[in-house]
Image 1 (cartoon, one colour):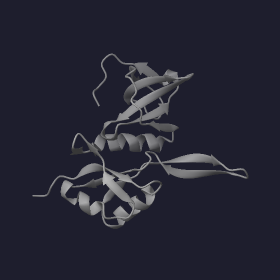
Image 2 (image 1 turned 90 degrees about the vertical axis):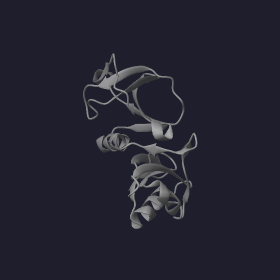
Image 3 (image 1 turned 135 degrees about the vertical axis):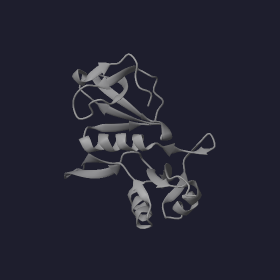
Image 4 (image 1 turned 45 degrees about the vertical axis):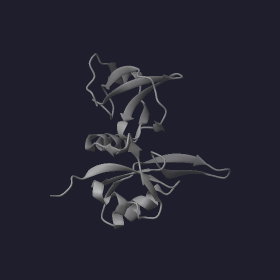
Length: 172
């Protein structure tokens, strides 16, 4: 019987996420590397550069018994563990990250632990119907999507008019 394929969280050496993802793909694995565009300022010019959304993380869809094989690619460091278990991410969470990136909204990631704020639902704009928490930061309303498998939070700036407080949020 084939072991079930799951999305495992691989940690890579610094700034080698793309190379690792490419090498894994070449060897036939399904890989998800969320990339975002960042405007970099040099003394003489500005340039848009692609960077990994989660620094040092690549998601690999594989089975538990093939993890060691995945680690043979140059740049791969280890698979992330929590409480002695390999960290996995549900398909729905991968889809949420893909959807957020596809909208092109400004995203920041934040690995710090944030106290739960108000539960909200997005009622307009490209992320309509997503639920999450609002974090007040300065004068902006940030919308928080948690990515539990790697204890990362995605902070997305969403206009207040698109957020509606929910009484009973769906567990995610």
